[in-house]
Image 1: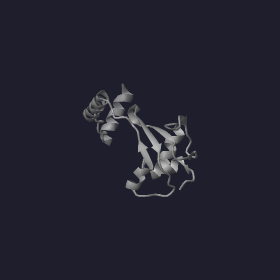
Image 2: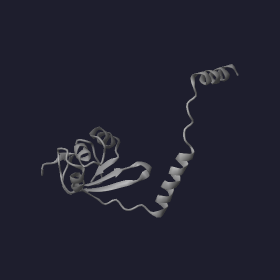
Image 3: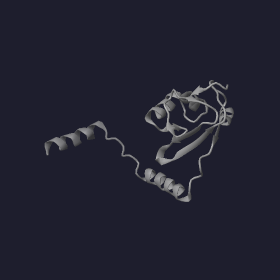
Image 4: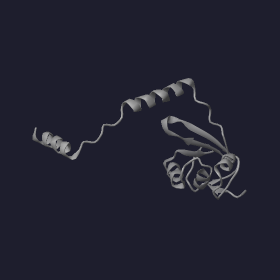
Length: 128
């Protein structure tokens, strides 16, 4: 287990992403950095490496690698593979997230028109 492990495999095993392909995609886009350098999915990870994962809404997750595994293990054991040093969100961040949730709930997308109404809208659009 002291041998280096691919970054995308470790991210999947440590349950930081749902699937390995999702971890690969996030690495390729540049949302994962190891020791301050943007990392590709095939980068070898070692104990002590520091990861920064960019999450939605501008949040950053800070992770320190404490163990390596190259096969799937139970989720409770997988949490022992890393130490999460992400700072707690400030009161302003918590409030902005709550407001964003409320805003999304209020502005739900409009239901799609049925076929007859779509035709009527198209007729009005092209005849005027």
